[in-house]
Image 1 (cartoon, one colour):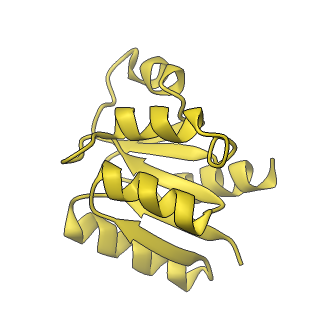
Image 2 (cartoon, rainbow, N blue to C red; image 1 turned 60 degrees about the vertical axis):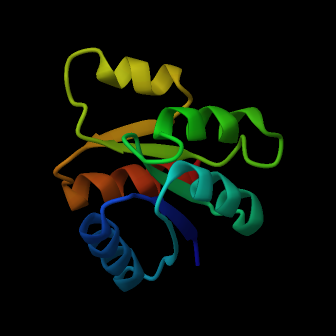
Length: 121
């Protein structure tokens, strides 16, 4: 069973994603901000991280930089989950260290394809 860390400050979004992933037999861990997300990634070693970009305490940009810069977490794939869907945002997100991204509102089928592809790599 693959373990996914959801880093999302919006309780409703976090709950919807969590319930959907659990139904698909993923183990789910959740964090409410980037700082908690970094800490849980180190402690729990998830197989993949869904990272909101606009987060309190530490934003998703900084959390991703820290995770990709640390030996123990740099290989964990990160999918940015963001309302930033403008031209050029994908490149900016990939340069920040994310392995892929999906825009909000989330298309669950597209997200599952991205998760499956990254977990198989």
